[in-house]
Image 1 (cartoon, rainbow, N blue to C red):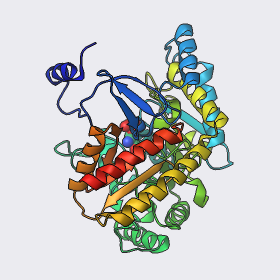
Image 2 (cartoon, protein in one colour):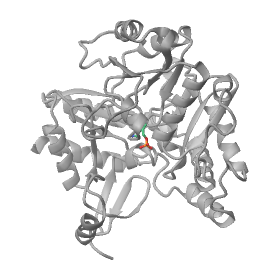
Image 3 (cartoon, helix red, strand yellow):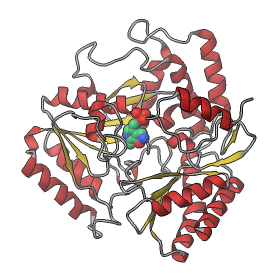
Length: 420
Ligand code: PMP
């Protein structure tokens, strides 16, 4: 087998430079909590392929479901000849997402595609143009979702012009907004919408209940419910982008649930199918069904292999109670991260929920987070950074990681902060 070094040479000559990678080690195989590269080196996985492999990599039930489906048929296109697993995934999502009202779902390939379609549905159903998004938001890299995403570099730089009728308002960011309460932060955001957009023009308010790429920002309590209430009164659609937070990641099926926020539409992807590409929009039947027949779709959306993987993934989550597993990971990791912060004044904030946890450095620049992350990589721990200032170390272990592996990972992180 070629070494990572050899593969990297080939990659540099063949793969477009714009597609980056966090490390230059090439994967050979991966399991629940570790990855092994082609050079035979084992990595502890605190990334889960960016919050995807919550049930583990190559999870047994997912592998079996995929194998069975590949043998039956790989693709027919649901828009041509439909099949049961697409319907089963939609039924399951309608039952799992918050809200007891009648729901419908539609399936897509990527998170960005789900967000685009949620906006299409909201605009179509309301007949209004404006979409409200938040500082630090991340919703994808397609043209519409670049416009919805806040950060210029690397996501938007020189890729414009962007789609119109997107309005950005302040996010509740307790560490950096002077400690506003959720209610106060919501008042700021809502005043801006009222004055600059006008409630009657708003099709949708789109928000990540805990921001992902923007820095694992957990809004102050009360922020999300206040936004959801305002949106309902304005006759607009409240869309929760649960693409990174969904499917047990934060200790509940969805991150809206602890504050009993019930979105009109929910976008999901990532953790939904154990690593197979699948995404969905789920929500109120009257909104979803407002769209004319043929208005939503795509060649691969709800591919049968991805749907089989999703059913096996959700079964695994239920069977192993991965929401409880995420809460257990929090109970192991958070005390360690807090202890680290007490010892090291360069750490400004420790936050997150379940198995979506982060350290933000006090300095709003990427130097320390980058150096610590590289030190972790050298010691065999796969970590990611995020945040508008690139100064957030984020931790997304697979929910099936065992305590011993988790603790080894935390030891490496500890050591990295000591040596840098
Ligand atoms: N929304 C959120 C909250 C995300 O975290 C992401 C991916 N990081 C996306 C949308 C886009 O998903 P995808 O990369 O599958 O298009």
